[in-house]
Image 1 (cartoon, rainbow over the protein chains, first blue to last red):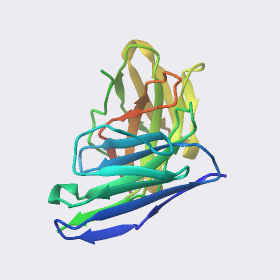
Image 2: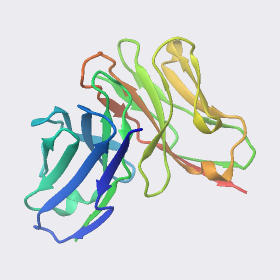
Image 3: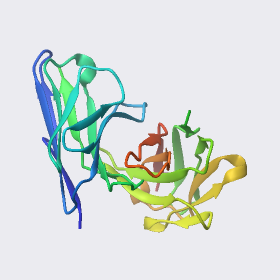
Image 4: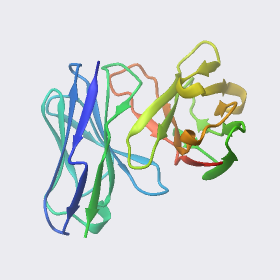
Length: 112
Length: 116
């Protein structure tokens, strides 16, 4: 069966510091991968998606970037965090050509 | 453009009562439709999905949803709510263009509280 992991679970960072959130998927190959941000009362906002190694599409302009160095690894990064980057970050995967997305447990980021 | 509307931000029901959460979508073709549930501080769990065929779909935890094309709706129902159903519920629509993208558009969610 497939599982998706995210770490860390919780992170408190000062403004201006760098960020690296990691997502890995097990039990499948060549998945589509997604990063979402969830802010209170605003639902889920798709940030990035990837259909393969090194292939990243950005949905919104922002302070964040994403990379996919390995088939089942997806990383969300920032060089300098802003207060507005605080939120709950969710990673998801789907099969190639599949419509159903499966979500990880999320990372709670608080920027102070 | 695709969009999903969940008109109810917060709903409170008594344990044992029936539940209906509303979802309306905007999409030109036949959409792929999903309901997810999120417990506090957790990720999203898929409850059910509709791609085609029977418009009444059954999901996990005793939930069902009905696709009504004429009303552009995909409402979630449960005949008898349990205290453990208290969570936030998200409706989502997929473009279903069959490619490798499969991006979803989510509603803003409905928070369900259950009274004992």
